[in-house]
Length: 409
Ligand SMILES: Cc1cc2nc3c(=O)[nH]c(=O)nc-3n(C[C@H](O)[C@H](O)[C@H](O)COP(=O)(O)OP(=O)(O)OC[C@H]3O[C@@H](n4cnc5c(N)ncnc54)[C@H](O)[C@@H]3O)c2cc1C
Image 1 (tube, rainbow, N blue to C red):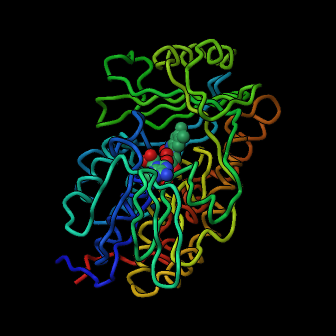
Image 2 (image 1 turned 135 degrees about the horizontal axis):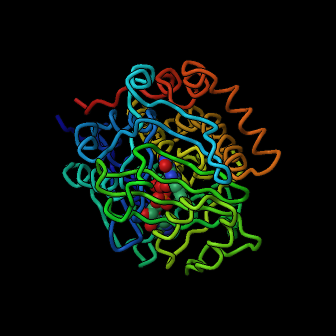
Image 3 (image 1 turned 135 degrees about the vertical axis):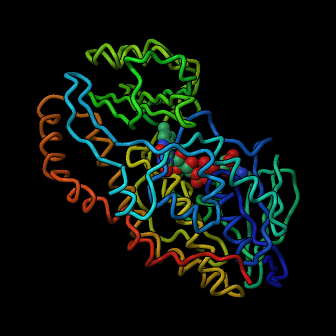
């Protein structure tokens, strides 16, 4: 049953990506009225795949989305890590029944468009949520009883509270933390989703596979139950680029994968070289909540893609934040402090892990041998590998901060 809490103004969410829409849904299911402002002309995601580890699937479950999401997800049998120069497999993580039993939810992959449209549809259907596109949040002010959000089109909108879900270049973060924009990056990424028919049988693999070589790595996995194939090439450039520099430069890609096995090059040819992304992370920070305003997802804790956790953490944030707001609906400042306190050390650990994995992914020479040894130790047996990952994917960690977010009675 849906209900509405009688706060004078809605909770405002800046940004309608995975984080913004999932927190809107979580808050609405807890009884809040929610207004989402998205700057773009559509609520949409880039054409690429995304991995949803059990913690992300658990958060989606708590948002009531399991059945809808399962229409779109594929369950890869394993994660495989391979050396791109000699082809050796230095790690394999089985994602079968033992894994699902251990973590309570599967490790899934999904097209980003399918993930976002599923959450979007649930938001659109929910009577407590209003979604507005072409609405850029420019600034905010707050006092003891409300927050006023200024939009770029000149409107001023009053809210009960404000959640900054406006991603890597968050304007809300700049007002709360003020650590400047993430302006340049040397880590360049090209990605495409192609039809199954574009991939020769000899290159097809049902697993999530990462090929690791010096300063460059390549990830692939099937999507939509094998209809599509997701390809991601990432390398460290000698140059630093402005993050807005997105026009593709095919020459830089092929040069960066020199020495990688022929199959990696063959897959590389399938990627659209017309557009590139400059990716990066930031160091963890404290104090992402200020009074009635807080941050979630990449706005709060941007991280490298190497733990495949940015979206999963945004989903966890969303459930945790909604749960804390539900516990103190009249006092968003207290609720946001409780949310932030529950999340910041954990997300800092995920950020650091992603940074560490970024280095491991692009080792060569002696360091590649060290990497093989480290994985042989940490993932020596199935149980040991699952133990190593329990802090990140396990039920116990999230149980501490996430309760089941039932529809408010
Ligand atoms: C190559 C790559 C691979 C990845 N793989 C994975 C993976 O496998 N698994 C995983 O969990 N994560 C992965 N991630 C990370 C994941 O994509 C992000 O962490 C996640 O999308 C962050 O979601 P978000 O909603 O916080 O931010 P965003 O997706 O950036 O959404 C922010 C939204 O806010 C809007 N916005 C921005 N500014 C304003 C404003 N001023 N006013 C209004 N709207 C605004 C934007 O238009 C956008 O819609 C990957 C990232 C990369 C780069």
